[in-house]
Length: 492
Image (tube, rainbow, N blue to C red; front, side):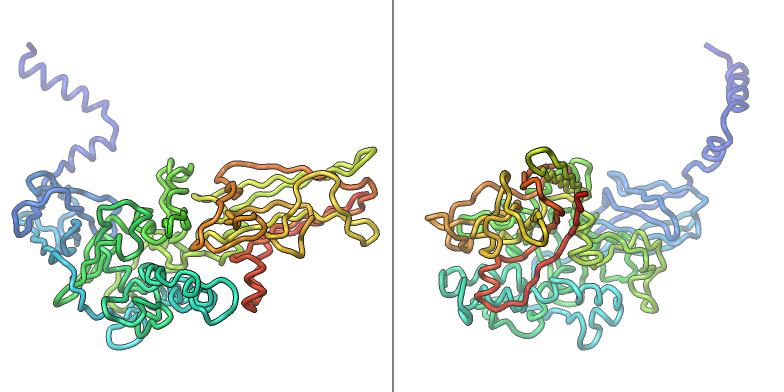
């Protein structure tokens, strides 16, 4: 064994070779302890964050956490799922933080906070966030006229109320999740009133404490979510571990795709109508650990404070989630999600057109969501202004769009064909779910068509449609076609 003198000599020599950064660490060994306790004793796993500091600490099994003494006098926050967030300032000793527990249960007679009206409405503090929400589909999920036209029997064409009246109550759980027992809209969503006319509103989303145990896709909307509405006082749940209000609580579900699954995964009347969550589960994005929020609540870099002048803290804009769920709009998101390549080869006997598409930067199939959403790839060849029919290659069926029958093209969708396979029918009537032809994330697909050799130009376009053209015409809706891209190739 080395003598004490030898040990000191070895230590001294080693210290001479230690890098400066490690020496700094040695000098700043944890010297201050924070103890986190609740009504039932020490709290393990509490998150401790310091103002203007990027590190996140956690308490151990005894509720303790050692903090470098260089952080003394810094303000800090303590958050743990199931408790209110607490704030304090780090002292050289005596740092015991007591967390208040969130009341168990859900007060069903709770009055929702209005996003835009009344005292202490959401927009009074969170103006930018409320504006983003107001411009998105969540704010009119219960009143969108196309949705109501499909739901009610007030127009010709498909009608859930007319075709399957016993299924009318299922819609409110997602489209008007705040509707309670005995309130207008529960049995018939076209009768929704008050704040529930605002669909999926701010206070509903931030009363979600977690997700119930159950099979995702078979319990929908509010029926899968674990709500925690207080009998008295207030509580708001969210992803921040250092929210400044004393009625805020941290919940990890807000940064998980599972939060979205309650409304974006659903089997209804035996049909797998909504499949976005299960598509994400199988995607390369999920394998990388990317959640839905990475794209659909991506920081826009413009917001620095979620409650400016109302007690909010200035933060890094790239750490604050945007509530604009379709950044740049639907068309921009589709364009960002699809790569396309076109090639024309004129041979001795014919003109060959090759098109390749690839879904990129997306965590689900394209298009996704409601089952009737689809895209149409069209390839149109012309000679002296006249359109030429393809000699070889896929063509569009009459149930896609009667005006496009026989044209060179590909459908990307999940049409439910009727018994004779001559038309598309609504999901509540069942049907034959033909091969899912939508684009898979990160997988390139290509198609080839042959046209007469005299072809002078070829136009390739991709159109997105939220509904089938036949129903759009029957119901008298304005066209919602979105031209994702259009390209004309001139053959010399």
